[in-house]
Length: 330
Image 1 (tube, rainbow, N blue to C red):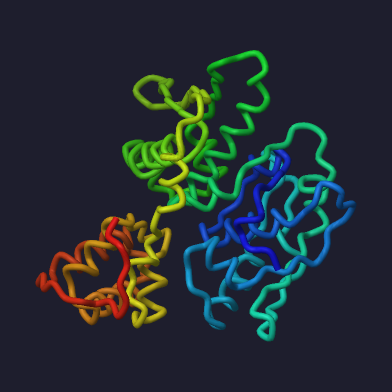
Image 2: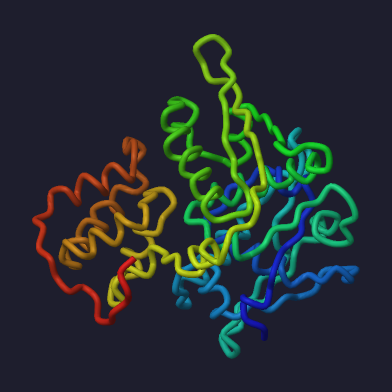
């Protein structure tokens, strides 16, 4: 089976790009990985084999049997709305099978997605896996694809392409937490600025934005998309050398710790993950994760991230070698 580096891009309809769904970054990257195996000459879906090695490269997460089972079950329970009116819904896959003998997953897309992934002739978007896999935030990939689809519709007659979306529309499409609706500052700092920073650093686009208000409320975001001349190999090196959060978690850490530290709901950035494992004992971080896990489903818990950060602050710093293997500092 080919390595990820030989799979260059995916193509999907603009309707699929704009669909409403709620996936983790790990689940998104699995879909991208399987979609990259579709050939332009295909007339129907096949059963696509994804090696666990390729999956781990795509997601930045180590997969044991338990984690694979959880991934399979989770993604099969998260459908996509294929239209904004929410009259058409489908699962991403009709079938997923673990193949332990060959260390692989066997996946087949749901037949309803055929018009969105096969025999695309107009209103579709292509994207390089290199870009999609390099994003640290799942929302960065979603926004990148959405802006890329808009750019593709207008690039033939505009140098700077505008794309305008209501704030609530973005939040609903991307299935963001309710707090993003309540506080625009949360939407701006946790999503907008973070995603645009990644898009401007890692992709072919440079995107700015302006806000459109209705009274005092920010109603719409107007993006301005340009494609600057390609730079030297510096940008490529940034992508290839980007470390993921998983790189800084000690090999001997528990699966629970890995799940919480890598969780989109806790939303830790890579530098912070690097910092805590450099300055705190692994067993203390394990205890913090146990505390967060016990409160995970507590309806009174306002923020899993705030709980995690608060428990970390209670720890006594003690620089230690948590890792049993070395890697270069970023």
